[in-house]
Length: 424
Ligand code: FE2
Image 1 (cartoon, helix red, strand yellow):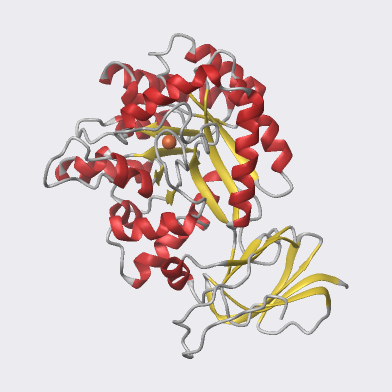
Image 2 (spheres, rainbow, N blue to C red):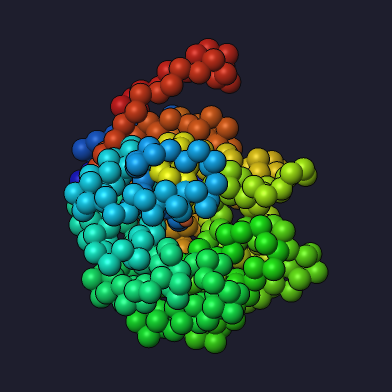
């Protein structure tokens, strides 16, 4: 059998000993210490890390790269960001949203991202961002899996047409039901919105991913309702709570009951370390809360935890590079997850865990999986996070779709600057 591609001497996040990976027809067909065969293309990983693609579990592609439009966020707060987005919305065009999104997708692919779940605002009656991103989803499919969440950003009840618009967006082909309970007028409205949105998802057979409790208010407990509704409606394994920052500030006794409930409901947690550390704690003087949700504790309880980028160069966040290793690096610091296993957990939170949340078919590096992977200029996941390793080659369905030359480092283990040619 003629193989399309063999990657030689690759270590993987799950396999520290170098292995060969054989690919044909866009799938991995064999993984073994040595594969005695020829292929149309060979890449020598030379003991470096090959990982399944990075997956961004939480993003806002309708706003990305709009930095400075119509003005900059001077305070850097969530509320000024929301106000700014409101100012920009009337001036959005479908073409401009699509153009910025495509530009971001190029960046993401070059950084080894293979899938993104993006929330898209449905509170603009024109739904032009939905139209634009549905178009982008089709256009980037050969390179990137895009999943869209219908996001009633101004509140499902608070924004008059949000319910009708959300229905329209789902009918147009948006993949996931979103929500923002902490932004409704009252706690009671927030809980009611969680119930209503979970019912919509149950009726339509769709997953749920809500912005949930993105606040420092320890009494913001919509995650509790989200978990309970998940159980009531039999949605286990299909629901994610994004941000969950109030959990950082909650009473420990309450959390000792809450986390097992989240685990029982199989609700996944998506933290956004870059944004959480920037946006939360803004009303604090000192000590100043970090605001990120309780990642080690959720992980220990068996909850699937993923990290998202959330924002790149938009009304909420001026920075960002589309690099999930940046996100993992920040998480290591904010959550103080500096143990060896903890750092590997952070790597999983930008690869395997979000892939599971998005329900990506054939994700992984076993025979039968899709031949989607990234060759990094690093020897293991920890080094990859430390150096935000160069993505030497990005492979999709067995084809190299992006390459970046190796970075010269003066910390190579042999004491010599490292240069590495993925072509061998
Ligand atoms: Fe978000």
